[in-house]
Length: 279
Image (cartoon, rainbow, N blue to C red; front, side):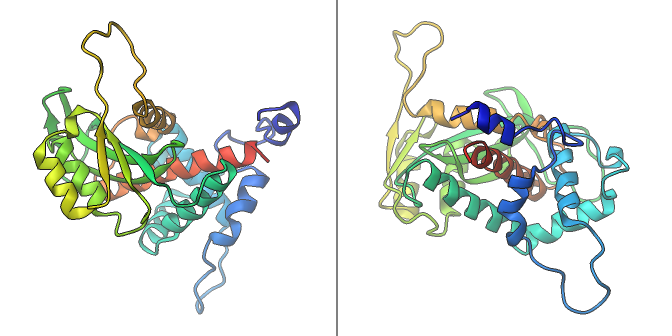
């Protein structure tokens, strides 16, 4: 609950930037950051400042070269971001915070129901030797990438992938579900919109996760104007939460893997603030 006492604890007015970690947030993740590697020179970089710099980039959407001078340089931020992505640190942070948020919400650590949806995002102007291909979403008339996300009934991110926008939802949905690798073994129910209906998706779903039953939630043909649909509003709300990070306003990344990293960081940022507001 957002009480006056909690508001004082979560006061960001004294921070240098609104995106900086508070003391409570830093305490939650400090022990999850891997120590410096043995051998070589002693680490001189302030890891908390590195995370502050990455969160500044995520929140403001600025270019790498426009990072303020009082934060670590872009080379340092990029190096640590890539390192933590490849050694699994970001995934570990996400998993631990996810379980803490589930416990805070009074739910079991492993969900039994999930909701799937996609978001097509326009690609920004890019350049470089390595640029992952984009596509054209004819339905939404968007040229860029598509973010496919899977959330639980609380609205927390379970899994996500980023792929070209011309891949249909039913194919992208199977890609997301096939990459869970048994991470959530108690999933029984999948809620989705009409883009995922049909025998093709159901057949592939039965091959990937035979225990998962799908329920298609359609908008009534007689409804007029805006209508809140059961369960589907949860994933739409999560997309809105993640889009508060301006780095996700467009597809700025050359590599889809980097786009997925920022999507996970947005989810981490969301969970950190949720946990600290309620403490």
